[in-house]
Image (cartoon, rainbow, N blue to C red):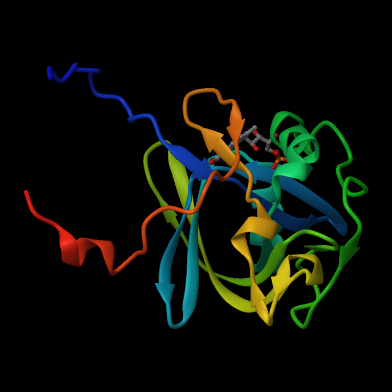
Length: 187
Ligand SMILES: Cc1cc2nc3c(=O)[nH]c(=O)nc-3n(C[C@H](O)[C@H](O)[C@H](O)COP(=O)(O)O)c2cc1C
């Protein structure tokens, strides 16, 4: 099978989508982000890649806090809206029902399968983008995705984004068992 060269480009990937929330001059604002990653699990830390100019980033710098929410597939329209409209132009404070946790200034999304309160650790500057690094202060999982005391990925049905302009995807069937199927590997 031949391997086609695609140039110096990012490869095709399905990425989970998150909504980053911050208060901007006292008003909650959200933006949609596909370029984010877990950095550590103890302390639980995320890295969020943002363009240099994002209204939400202004709020993160203003308060030193932000939220990272993981929408389900059913929230695609609201998540997409937050990714095509900027808080510089529209008021996105009423897109979601909100609550606040112990940090007091990170707007969390009621009814979202997962919504996480984060404290800003630092902002790493790259040439064209910045990485906002945040430590988790609290993770809230919605009752609707809980099953037998555990969060269920099937109930969660996380919203995924197909790199390079979409569309959105969602989870299919369960695959092989992680940390186990490799034991049977033979070339
Ligand atoms: C599916 C999707 C993924 C996106 N991923 C990112 C991203 O990873 N980083 C980024 O800076 N902007 C990303 N955006 C664009 C921002 O969400 C968009 O510019 C938004 O309007 C910024 O809002 P704000 O100015 O109110 O913060 C994405 C948009 C969509 C629809």
